[in-house]
Image 1: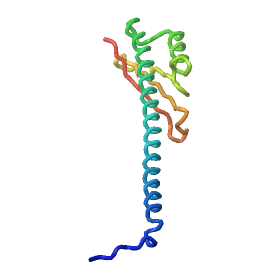
Image 2: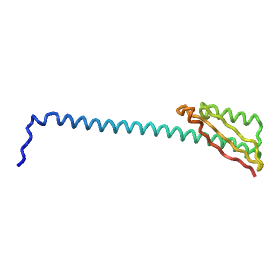
Image 3: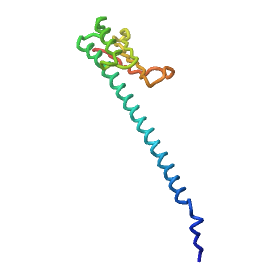
Length: 134
């Protein structure tokens, strides 16, 4: 038969158990908060990539409608202004460029941007598409 520990020896055991439980709970809550912050950042990045694709699609649609990859300077300038205007469906710190026609008559449309949360040392994000009309 084993002897039972005296109540005097058991003092403080439940307090230690509660403190360990609180520590484990705190680590879990901090992990969830970090996960939520990361999910928000990924959502913002996805939205920016979608916006870049839509902006590039807008100028390529203009090329298809006009039947040429050589657009008037005013059309290109308006598109570039729209790319740079983050308050009107543009992107933060963005530039839009269209290359000169190559030997096959195609051009490359490039949209580059840097989100405010991304440091300059990491460089710019980029979306690029090639357009060649038949």
